[in-house]
Length: 265
Ligand code: HXC
Image (cartoon, rainbow, N blue to C red; front, side):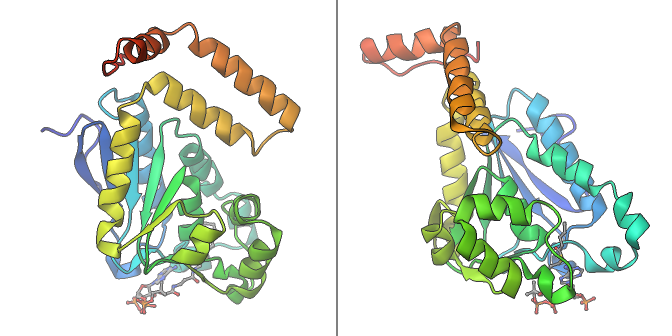
């Protein structure tokens, strides 16, 4: 299959042609352990932007290397920024674009996901981890703190005590600890993490894209709001979906004992 326009591999990202609605993106800076330069983040945000517009793509899987998912912000680049440089840094805006990707994003993590690497994994909606994965926010060892959501997303995901332990000590947690704490959905063998993430993405890609996007939006909104407002938001999305052809198709297909054929309308 030809790659859809705008979805070519870049200097820091390898893209596999989408199959069954799933695009696989691999971070590709092995010489620097997939450290996240501004260029890499820009390329990732652009790929996700293209994927969001592309009807052939219903979900994206992001992965890194066998031993390192991503070693965090590129420290060589970071070393060159003084306080004003950090103040004017474009990276927060790039992270924001990644966070706003409206389709499901699944991270398949093998090896180290550290600092910005752990934060990138937490930008995914679902994390599948190889049993060799290590998650950590070791910024404290550099006399800095996480700067791409690592404090906020971690505490909301794993709770106060574990988030404090990770951020204040810099200690890593294993894939299994990450699963037990809710950071990771499933642990597989390292060889199977990408294929499991793709299989899961295909399951999701077969659903109505309208319902999937509403579900993602409403779920993420739970981090932003009070329960009563979140419940109203959920109800509004539920109501909007009642006006879609896909909703009628889904219910009719069940009643007629056949597979639904969703059109995204
Ligand atoms: C730049 C990095 C890097 C990084 C590794 N490298 N991590 N370059 N930024 N974050 C480079 C090394 O300098 C080295 O380059 C090469 O990659 C191989 O690194 P090694 O350490 O020899 O590899 P290895 O023994 O396999 O260990 C892998 C590792 C370790 C455990 C991931 O590299 C590591 O601990 N990295 C730093 C992790 C970290 O502190 N991350 C937090 C960053 S701060 P040369 O040229 O010598 O071959 C952060 C803040 C986020 O993320 C803020 C918002 C984004």
